[in-house]
Length: 130
Image 1 (tube, one colour):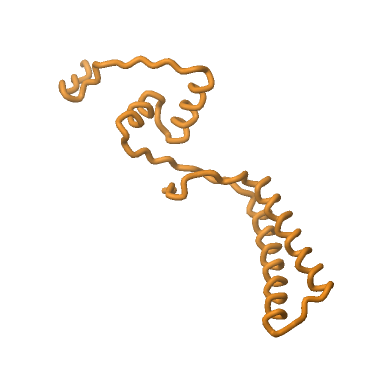
Image 2 (cartoon, helix red, strand yellow):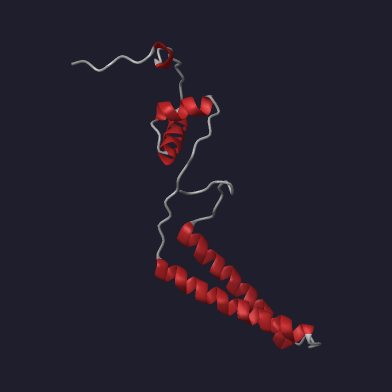
């Protein structure tokens, strides 16, 4: 028994041909894969300006993230103590300035570790996951 034919209004009989460079094709193929669509469907939806829903799966080493969270909490605690000292009328001594510089350096190192773990996020802040 043959498969039933689609209604005339649902049949996609018109074709559009487009040429990509190798790099363009790889980019489009990557975007389509990220969105979970075949390339043809992805390009059609983009051409018709339909909203595409992209889902990202984030894989992380929880132990490493926990370690970074503990480090960030310690740095935050140090900065809070320094702020409390200055708000209480404390004078800016050489030791206090050195402590501030140390905290800032630790924050920069922590940021570098986070970037190495997950990369720099350059996405759409409105993107959501299911």
